[in-house]
Image (cartoon, rainbow, N blue to C red; front, side, top):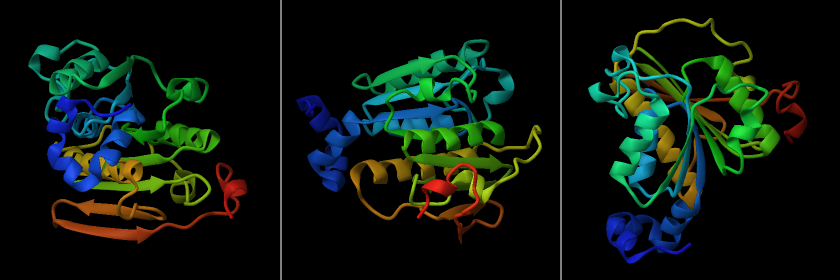
Length: 244
């Protein structure tokens, strides 16, 4: 699908970077976002306004008052509404030219591949490592990239996982941390979510250097960013057989 006259005008400042061909790649891309919360909010907002044409968001929760310090897809009027419904309303109000598909369901090992469908990539925006590992495994089984992010307090992390090329999440975190309610301030998922969205733009348009085989660590209190190399594990039960 080519760009309409309205889209050419809307994205005129971006096509100075990507060119119309790159913008068409964004328009024709299909992205899967797991989560409509703290990370899912900035990720989906920036993908939407940039013209990523097909966005699927999966989340089973409803909007609660305690979400609103960080989940900027939602507001007071959305309390007790499904997060996916609130997300779709926000995103389509920002950009009516895109398609937003919503699924109010819990992601499990049994349904993840069906939920992802024919998406070109998976973006992890969940708040627990169990689901992150489910998404990581699906990315290797479907052979599509997985864009990981996680946050707590003022700290965050992000990495881009390419099946057959990089270490997977199970290589980096073979054991999931215990589930817990963690402290969080909204700027942290805002920062990490924007990093994830930036990685998605670079991947789709083929520009720049991705966070491949390295994890970005953000310390908001020190205003510091560190990138740490990640290593493939030949014995990894998820990706070991697919790595060279």
